[in-house]
Length: 233
Length: 223
Image (tube, rainbow over all chains, first blue to last red; front, side, top):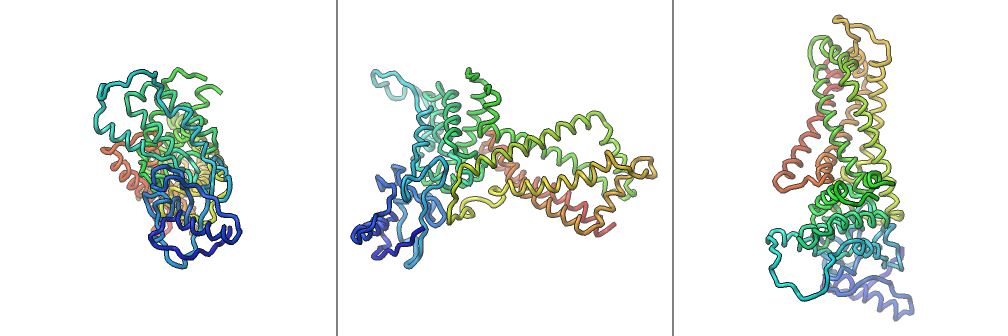
């Protein structure tokens, strides 16, 4: 681990802007800047990461690193920054990790198959508001990987459960529900993520507040799929 | 591997085995506690010895004994496999980590607590089960093998009492997380029932372990 002094930080700066200031300083001195992931900086893309002072996305709950401000730290503090640590997230460089394992889980079944054609009329498939809201809550997962980073077992179960239950709750998703959950869990396990032990660290650190109820739903989906699917291989 | 072995070797499948065996072992604790409450009966252990003789020879109990051993073996084996898997899922740990900010200590240390309980179980089985089944016991006034006197002698030793109390504290913490966690793993969550399951699990864990811990303490201080 390397310690860098950073000067000229305003309390209104975001955590990533603080890193920008540090990198500018490093460039001016002819040093290599620190590599870190970022994109929208609005808390919606899921690109930023960072394990800050022992917490995924830093000390504030319900926020991404890009939305974390320097006013939550004291002047003169030493802040430790680490990349997400998981066998399934190999470190590319410095603080940048490869999170494509989550993409491969998504590709294993996190979609619905629809033939192209005319746009269907709105409200042809009735969905109760309560179900639509729950599915939407699950769909807010931004796939940042904080759940994996915070989990003692480096399990991606909260992410996987959000993707599975989002579709399992809706009529359009029910068609492929069984193969979806079987294939996505198989991919999750093949990527080397750990198992869930219901610790709850994932949900506590999730920047968008994905609930543990999704994991219970994932388990229900998996049990019923394994008991009744046509897949005997 | 066929679909069945694949299911039960997946991460969720192994957790299902953990939860089902765990709840089964909880039911064993209830039976074991209720039966052993006879130790508190002030009859020099006659009722307790009748009970232990019955438990050692009743065919239904003897069959359930095999199921119980299997329950323990599956619970321990899957715990071992899952722990190994979970450790290899994070080969490089964090230099600075504050898990206490987002989770309970007991939920993060189920393996440690389980190991303490396993060590206790081996001592406990060797001392009582082994001697009741294969050892030479004296005969009490009712004509039954006198296991009560073995219990009384064992619980007269301070270090033996200490082992029991420590193990029951570990068991209480193991159950506080394990009981409600089993329902979550089985997908049995609902806003109508989950709050009850959580409070019941907490009360169950504390009361059962208090009940067991009371036995060595009672003998040490009052007998």
